[in-house]
Image (cartoon, rainbow, N blue to C red; front, side):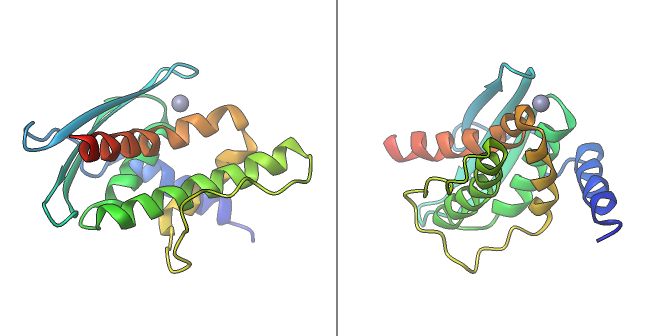
Length: 162
Ligand code: ZN
């Protein structure tokens, strides 16, 4: 598998240097949610615009932080834009599972990662997001990678409650 880590590094750097969907949306109608990772100082601001049919019409990302947090946010925005909220939540769960399974194996107790309560469609493809799986070798950076996703989930929860 020579070159795979180089490819992954290239994908992460590409999203860091040329972040997708960078910017702001007008609120309302869009919803704004902030996330913060105090361990690293990463900030993510998610602007998400959902329609009455439960689709992610538009998403914009603001904030600043390390390359892992910012590239993960960029990849997330590209992955969920135009999808239904339901699909976006599934992609989020699949990504967090990718991170948590490895987190468990890093722990070395041999137990399987705790199952997410959301059933994940086996057809969900993570694509570029798999480039971030190398992060799990550095457990302190996992929170950098999952920050944008936790912030997106929080935004969906807030929209549901509104
Ligand atoms: Zn970070």
